[in-house]
Length: 203
Image 1 (cartoon, helix red, strand yellow):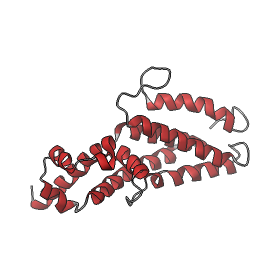
Image 2: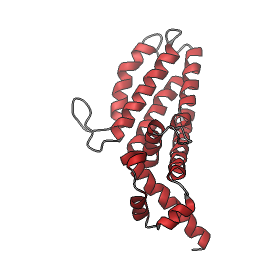
Image 3: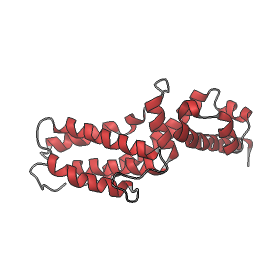
Image 4: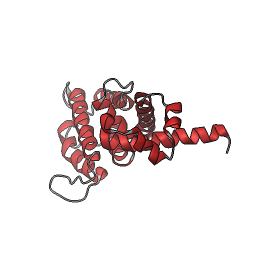
């Protein structure tokens, strides 16, 4: 392995380790020493790649945003209608928040650290807004204010899954096992009849 390859590997390990710590503990609670230990790297190596804690946080956010953009593009691109795309994008986001530390960290840091130059919501919000506008133009949504209302609803759903991802012991209301896909399927079954026009219209 060349020196350049080793440096690249160390950088990736530092970002991956930092993602886990930022997701669990937030920006203030994250220890750079713990990140170094988890990545099997020295503090010198950390500061070589990331001169400040904020630059490391921004690198983690960038990775989380990239994973999110890719998943959202795949979900929206495969959907056979704009409204189906909205549902599929929320499924993709919930899945990422359940399994990907970099996405969990990006969401948390966006919410907690306004001085971090990253916004996880920029990685998915515009796509959902565009899908809802298209769904409304195609007559899939009832009411002139439907796109804005459903956008707010999607934001609440994603925020809920973000919060659940921060708790390893999370149990959904009513008990049962925690499954983002199962929970979202049940939620959309309740939600869609109230926003689709006419009731029962296929996605």
